[in-house]
Image (cartoon, rainbow, N blue to C red):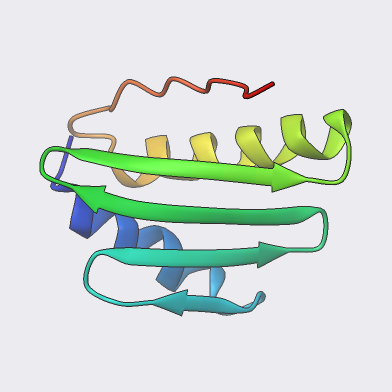
Length: 86
């Protein structure tokens, strides 16, 4: 995977054209109509947390974020693992 900071910046800059986004060197937040995605670049890992109002919205946001991340990091596709909290 490209560096986590680069992936973080690419995702945020891509979505900022249509959605509210905050971004600094190691953190980002994208506010989608269905929920939010927070991103933290940590060493060799980009930690993404998605929150939505319902299961369908959560699945949709996970899909959108994963597809875009894979598109931007096509040279070194990252492994994406979503985990659900109770």
